[in-house]
Image (cartoon, rainbow, N blue to C red; front, top):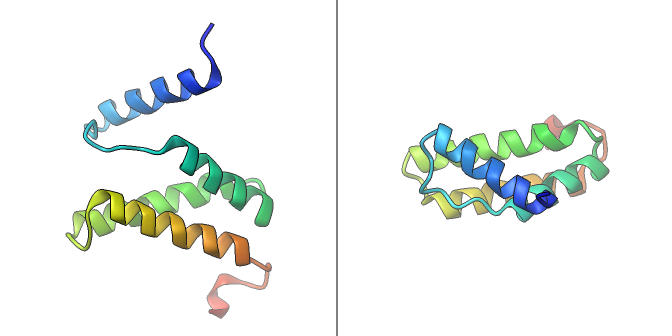
Length: 95
């Protein structure tokens, strides 16, 4: 029987292949860590939403040529982590 880590790595590779992104390096532990921060700092359903939006932002930055893939992902995940950590429930548009 596969471990959770092996299953996640296999699933990640399958997703990357299906989206023709095999050349992208995904730090699964960092993504899960960000999801955990969002889940505990905001609410549980914020975890997938946060990781999706961070990935979307990173993809847009990379696609526009603003930054390389790794730098785009690090910046997007860093911003999302900071926002989730600082979240007070008073509305993100207050910034």
